[in-house]
Image 1 (cartoon, helix red, strand yellow):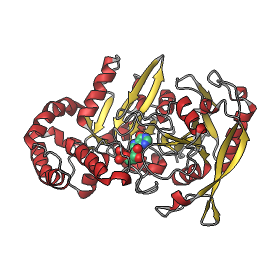
Image 2 (cartoon, helix red, strand yellow):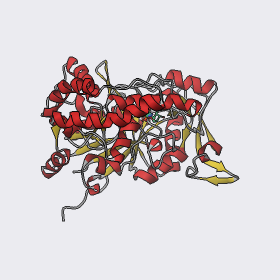
Image 3 (cartoon, protein in one colour):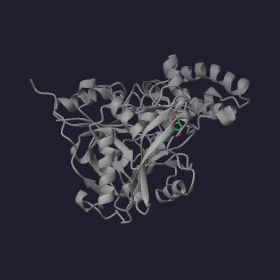
Image 4 (cartoon, helix red, strand yellow):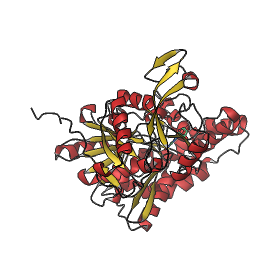
Length: 436
Ligand code: IMP
């Protein structure tokens, strides 16, 4: 049986939540492997819209096990709030099906305070983070001073670690950024009931996954953000603080890389980006506003308007190279209906040369000139289409062009927010590892 990794092939917000939810019926478990509650996965089912941040999108299927892997940074209070919202909708969120790695690093209030203070102090140079404390928490992990979910199981230890952490964090918050210091005892006291509530959910995710594999179960790894926000491979420094590429599903989930059998790259039929950073195909005029409004391109987590632009095959090609994408799931194709022409960026001109992959230098992407191919648009409303051959010819040609430019087939086309508004062409079947 094959496991699947779902990644965002652009700058996040590609609609991964819907694709995870759609593919979940064939899987046994869904694992988040990086990021935190900077992610916002929206899933619409039966007239209801669920906004998920930390809990894997497989949670809407009651027989699926959902796991939060060690690569995730977890805000324990946010996690509880998200659980409460889903329980209020009648979902079962018991520890039998929702599990958290003891190795997850915790986002605590000082991480958020530092994230926001730093952004404010940067002024126009800000990254445009979600302000959720993601970067400062991963910094502590790398500096080996982080507090992990397993520390919730020993309150005295947790309290001591909070005291140590705040010695440094308060010096920064108050001394450098002129913010209020945080009181370690108040923070520890607030965490006490949260720790008690989450304790039954803590587990060894790696062991759980190996058990699922041993009984022939299938695992889906749910990425957050997108490849071009990857800390190593994205548009640094305007990136998030984790590895968003498919390979990190192994490290961040706690499984061997040989267990990652197939990669589905989720890409919007156009491109969006939130926060700062270069965006070669950005449309700042009427067409951009049309896409922004028709696609309701507003961030799930921060409520910020997303920047919109044409589909960029250079960006997708790089994602294919970095992640070994087997198939694309193309989302929001319906949003492009009504445009007289649609454009795809096929390559860039960079310092007088044509290039097929993004330049590496920090300022490189801001310098490139996109080379466009223009294709005829279509006017038909696509939201009721369920079979590929029912798509207008112009839309099929657009997809064929994307496949030719990236060398990857489009296996799924999404034409609306609801589960059923999907055209399944079938995912390419990679060969699962042979039994011997
Ligand atoms: P951070 O992850 O909050 O540190 O933000 C760093 C950058 O990643 C900013 O440009 C954010 O807008 C962007 N970002 C973080 N999470 C998401 C997401 O889920 N979708 C889209 N952009 C994101």
